[in-house]
Each structure stands twice: as C-alpha cells, then as structure tokens.
Image (cartoon, rainbow, N blue to C red):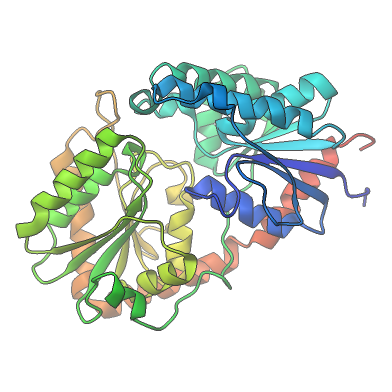
Length: 404
C-alpha cells in the first residue's frame, strides 16, 4: 500500500459549529479517516481544541451587514484565507459550496489535487434565491467552477451522481464516484429514558411522529405541517426544527404551527438543535420518523432514525430510495415537483395525504412500527458503516496524491 498522504479536509461546519447534515458527515468522516491518512481539518469559525484541526478561518469583518448577498461574499473571504492555510498538503477535500472555492484555489495556486464532495447542488435549490439574493449567483459560481475543475467529485448517492452529470455536463462522468454517507451505529442507537421528553413537553405515554431538520424549503417543512393536520386525535407530532434559512420562512413556520393549536394532534416544537444524547431519547421514544424533503441528495438524518430503530416515511427523492427500502424499513412517497420557484409538489394536498397515511399506521400499530424499525437498524449495520466509507475515501486520496 502506498504511504498515507497528507490530506486537508476543508469545511464550513465542524464541531461544535454544526447545523446540518453536511457538518455531521464531515465530523464523522474525519473521525473515521484519522489513522488511515495524515489528516488535518480546516474549518470556518473560531479556534477548536481538537487535535485534527490545523486551521480555522473567520469571515472578513469588512463584509458585515444584513444584505443577503453579503453572506456569500463573507464565505468567499474565508475561502481565500483557507487557501493559504492548506499550503503543503498533498490532497484537499472540500465539502459544500462554502469550501469548494478554497479547494479549487488550492489546486490553482499550489497544484494540490482537489476532491469535492457534493452534498447538494445549487441549481437544484432555487429557493436559495430567497435566502441569498444576488449571492445565489456567487454560490452557484463557486460550486460550478470547483466541480468542473476538481480531480474527483464524490457523490453521496447514485441519485446525486446523476444530478451532477445532468447539471454540469462539463464534468467528466468518469471523475464522479459514489461513496455513500454513513452513520455510527454505536453512537446512534435506541436508548431508554424519558427525562428529555418530559422536559420538552412530549407525553411519553402517547404515540408520536418525529421530524429532525432545519427550517428550510428543501426539507419540506410546510408539507410536514400539512401532514400534522391529518394525524389521528390524541397523537403527537414532534418537530425538532431550528436554524431557519430566512426570517421569512421562520415566521411562516411559526404562524403555521400556531394555527395547529386547535388541531386534533398535539404539535410539540423544539426550536433548538438538541445535543445528541437528548435527541437519542426523542428518537427512541417515537413511533415513526417523517422526512418530507423536496430535495435530498442523501438524507443522513434518515440513517440516524433507522439506527435508533424507527421506521421512516419519506419522499422518494434524491438518495433517499438508496437508504429506505420500500415496505421493509419504511414507506417511500412519490414526489412530483411543480413549476413554482421553490419546487412545491404539483398537488400539495395529495402529497400530504400520501405521507400522512403510513405515519398514521405506525402510530396506530406499534408492532408494525417495531418490526420495520428493527429492519432499518439491521440495514444500517450492514450497509452504512463509516469504516467502509472512510476506507473508500482514503483509497481515492491515494490514487490522486503525488507519486501515486
């Protein structure tokens, strides 16, 4: 085997500053890669007391302000500093458009081979215009330029690979490889205890469905509330939903939740991102997990729910059908996008009906939910180990490192 290359992992999110699935991926991948390669992490934000972190990069204060395009400009400012910080590594591996430009510039300036992992694609997230304004053109530029110039592009699912090839025809398909996302089944598992449930206002003696994710169009949060309206009386819908993309969608979500106060189902909204040990309690006490995403290149949160023994009801988009086995570990609901600017389903009411029906089945039939949840746990253990994923990633680095 060739020597372990020195690898720079480039990311916006890294513990303790994590708000989405891409950040979880990077954190878990770094843990699994440690020892397989000579790894150093380069991340946005404040310094970390973590032996893997070699550099942290703050956005320029001169770009402070509330104008939406400034957020994208601040990202580029951190990328410039990150580029200088990776001088001397043998391979750079960037995650999301936030760090893709740094990876691309490292290749231009220092000749370092660049690997880019695609967790989502800007052309398929048109609702980000609402979030970034003119900055959406800049985020799209960063992603397109980096992927077209990368030595290898990792797609986290076969669905994502198809999207990369379709959205970016100038990317050589032979450079796009599929390495799935993963989950650590020792860290994500069913636990006992109801202290967190009681503290958050969840009744442990009544069945509940649960959602975990950001308040964003991508996660289908408005359709989730349509599902809640259709659930049987006496049940609960628990929303672990925070980090809204914009003040507008935050207010829209808050208004919709308030309107459900008189609905037959009790809606419990946990607005902050819970620590993992508390989230494990919430997941473990649930009957079913709901993922109504309208765009989901992989959907690591579904793996986390399955690892906790939950059946999953999810829209059949992106990489989700590679995780959830229809009628075995959960239910997949077909999604047909309409022609509006935010990718709503062609028939939102029918989509909500189709999601709500299997959720209601699980709430009413604990034996069914338990059986499908156990099948999901087995699938996680057999197919989505971080050990295997890190091994595949390390081999890709070796194939690109100087002297390979």
